[in-house]
Image (spheres, protein in one colour):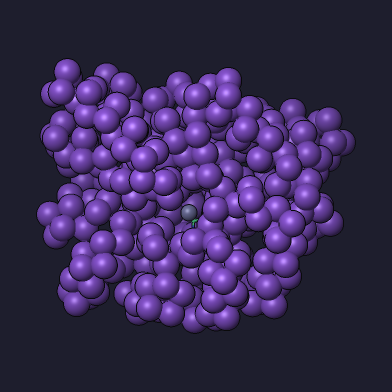
Length: 335
Ligand code: HPA
Ligand code: ZN
């Protein structure tokens, strides 16, 4: 099963580039930028990565991201993640980045986007991994700040496929961002959002009806509301589920109790993702392996999850077809 998962062609649809920041690279970049970080060793960092909830994690995640200053830092961060994709048979990835985490500290929008986008272009050419970018608004900040970010993004529109919504969910409902999502859609961005990770089902309703999102990031708490589940199935919206993130942030207490299989049985379209792999103990393949073991998933179910990852990506139809054909060829040989 492990080998089957490792060789399975797949896409990753829920990944925060700032959350892919491995301790070794963090030390290296902090050193070259002459920034002090409050850890002396990788072991100390790993000890600090114990979270009781989303906010516990976010505090440490924003602190880690604060050593990123120059375009080369964003490039190195992104290329390092894309190399891991290539090694895991992740053929396509949709990368979230949080501009406000950087612009609020005085780093130019341009620095962030150029570093990330150049790494994506190089990885496409050299590693054969394709990618699209999702600009995520931070929901703990104001809608006005999100509007400012939207404005800053416009000269770089060709490099950005979608907008997202992340950070502290509770107390920051999707409705807070209704106007900026409308404006983002007008600019041609595909709307996506985190919903139902810690927030209740009503946040998921707001995200699908108010923000008109095309895919739900996490969405675990949609299961609280039967009518909502029926609606998500009817609208054919996929959920980007992140198993190891869920246990690390105590959204799910035990992987054996993870609702992933139940979600699939209800007819929801599920994909498996790593969210913030450097913080939650594993890349995308580790997530597949962990849920396969915990829930005893079959090869057929793993194939479906991988197929969804291409089907519900933001790629053009013919691109999806190309990836799914490669997956089907693999599956016919290995099932
Ligand atoms: N949830 C909300 N915001 C985030 C996350 C997450 O899992 N990861 C990075 N920002
Ligand atoms: Zn996330």
